[in-house]
Length: 404
Image (cartoon, rainbow, N blue to C red; front, side, top):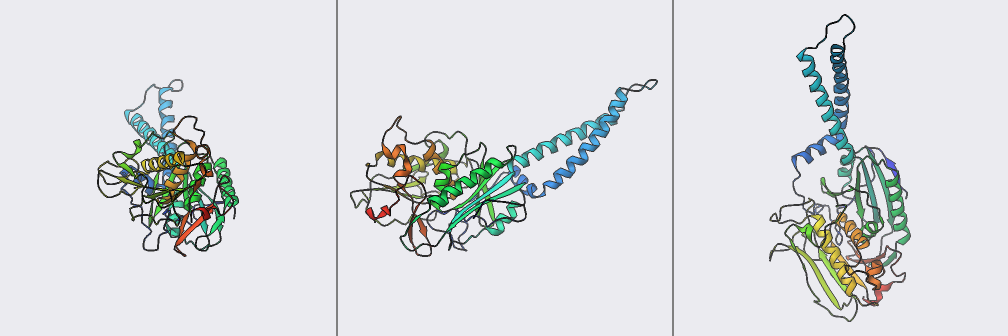
């Protein structure tokens, strides 16, 4: 399949909510909580599909403002033998229409920068359905343009190893080409619909334009958030929540490390088959309360019982980097997780950009994280994990025999 342009009414199939381990059933599509948006954000979202109202208003107010300004200038600069001066009413109407025109210009710019081009990217197995087609079609009407980049692969048997490197690289290249061809003055909104390893690989290879927005489809609606251009250090993005990354527990082997991350509020992650020397679990909590889900809202209140996607991305990426640094040279790090797909893409970006926290670390897993990182995805049809190779640095052989 190839990248294609689409108009606002005809769009491609929409993304499934990014549940990295278990794909949602038709009755469980709303598995990532959504926090209320501000009045201003809701107003912009409602106005985006009707931006023609702003265009018409801008044309009318601009025409009237120019006409009134011409009358005022004619009064100020009269022809010979004409009296100098203008009426207060003309001044008042001129100023009022100039103000309205300026406000509409600002509103039009806000809509263009916030609802410019929607980039929908998909990489799913043939038996994975899309649940959010009506939502995406409604959302697409509010954007100036819609671009789609779609790849697929055949359905897999239980425990299969599948090499998706070529498909993944073409997907990454096609998306980057579409981003490069877009207008620089319009906003970039990315809607990923990818299996977990593909989302992380995309985040690792993509050039993240400043101000890029990520959109998550949640049942009948969608929520967007914006990764920072300069990520804060540590867990500063958590706004009061703390990570509980347990130490080596439930170990039953002599090699390999397993990271389990459950960030959707739907319970623990199914443990992949295999014997592991160490296992760590990543939760986000307030004190001793139950684990918190990631909420598609930036900067929620610390006591709201939710965690913003920026903080969740930082914490999970930091745990992966810590585990990679401590990993013996011949071992693998296996990540099994439930998290929004937008967060998965952000985690991939962080592990590619930040690498090891130790300056000038020469450990192989820190220099090239994907060479030791394995990310299976849960296949609902077979109720088992599938092990894809999505990055060229990953081994070419069915390496999971070592831990399965």
